[in-house]
Image (cartoon, rainbow, N blue to C red; front, side, top):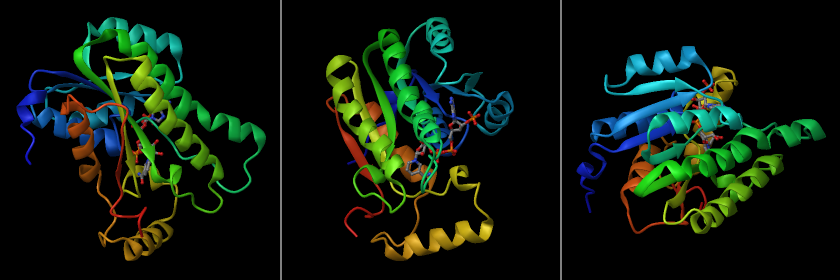
Length: 241
Ligand SMILES: NC(=O)c1ccc[n+]([C@@H]2O[C@H](COP(=O)([O-])OP(=O)(O)OC[C@H]3O[C@@H](n4cnc5c(N)ncnc54)[C@H](OP(=O)(O)O)[C@@H]3O)[C@@H](O)[C@H]2O)c1
């Protein structure tokens, strides 16, 4: 079934984390579907670089999703929006993080999502939505990644809870498997390519995901007016492999 892209035409779509990876691909796809897209992330340089590569209609702002006062100012200054997408995120430290690192790891991927959703909701027009971001470690942990699994599990439950608390705003989450994005740029090229090849060899889909694969799911959840409280897995079959 094809989804008419015109459902996003003229809608204001705000993407926190829209300067890279999932968010950037979603900004591109939403702008191509006729939405009025606003991207935001912490670094002005990243915002400018992303805007230079996106359609001219896209605008940008610098914003840290952990800064409550900045979020209040940002959404108050937007003059309403239709859809919020939160892809802002990082990787949590794996294998024996200190207690301080473990607590800190919740800042962006849990508290950033929580604050953004709560603060944005009153500014969302009728029929609008919030789409959050998660990973399949919520369902299928990797050895050494207990902390990341816990954050992802919390985001999954938060999605269902917020769908009730913030209704009639719809709240859903995209739950991704491994995808080729700058998130993995901290590894050497050799390590990263070996990880991609090893993962791809085990996936029913036979390849690693691309950001554009994941963007389709954000677009679906924004447009599907009868879907709320859902966590949609898009992982090339990783969970069943
Ligand atoms: N890629 C994967 O394989 C994968 C799989 C499953 C789940 N995920 C999760 O999906 C999310 C997005 O991943 P991605 O691959 O798109 O990552 P990415 O390419 O590294 O993009 C992350 C984006 O978040 C922004 N950001 C980080 N901290 C922020 C903050 N405090 N406030 C505002 N913006 C912030 C970054 O820009 P600035 O640095 O300019 O702030 C960047 O635009 C992450 O939570 C990641 O853990 C990724």
